[in-house]
Length: 248
Image (cartoon, rainbow, N blue to C red; front, side, top):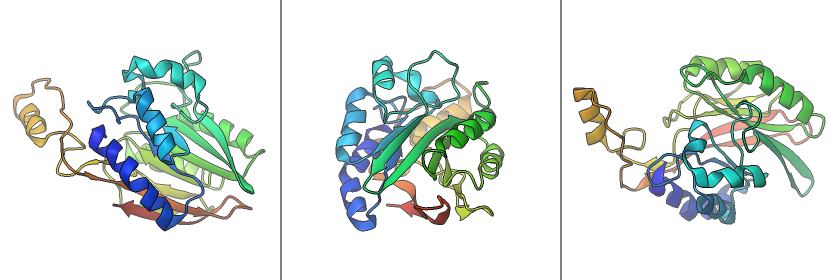
C-alpha cells in the first residue's frame, strides 16, 4: 500500500528470505503506486529484482494505464482471472524451481464488488486443470466479504495447497489448515504505513466520515509494517503442513 509499503518489501524481503528460506514468494501489489491505486511497470520490475517470484493484483490493477502492456507481456504479473475475456493478462502462472513446480492463481470475489465472472466455477476449473501439471497450487482470492472468502476456501479445500485472501488491508487471525488439507487465511493484511486507516491518513478518513463528502483518501507517509503468511506444503501431495501469520 503506497510507497512506504513498496519500499518496505524492497528493503526487508532479502532478510525475510534469509530467515525463512522460501521456495516461492508471492506479493499482491495492486496498491503499490504512490497514491495507493494501481501498480506501475517500474514497481513490478523492482519487486521482481528484489526476489518476488509472482506479483498478483486485484480490482485496482486497472488504475494505471501504464501497466496494460505489461499485463499482456509478463507471465509472472497476474490479474484476477475471472474478469471478462478480452482484457489483457491472465490470472495464473506456473513457476519451476529445482525439483519442484508450483502454480499461482489470482481470482476476485463478487460480494460487495464488481459483478464479474463466477470465481468459484472458474477457480475449480483452473485448479483441476493445473493439478494435472503440479499438486502445488496457491490461490490469492481478492475479495471483500469474509463469508465469501471462507466459503471459497472450503470450496477448494483438498484441491488447493493454500487459499489466502487479500483486499481489506486488515490481517485476520483465522489462519488454519482446513479439514482436507488446504491452508487458509481470510486476509493477509497490507504491507503499508502503520498508524493509518487501511493505509490512508486518518484525518482524511475521519473528515470524510463526519462530513459525508467524497474526499479522496491520501496514503499516510509513515514507516511501514509488512503482513503476510508463511505456508509449508508437502511437495508430493500438495497438502499444507502449516500456515504461520507474519507481521514484520
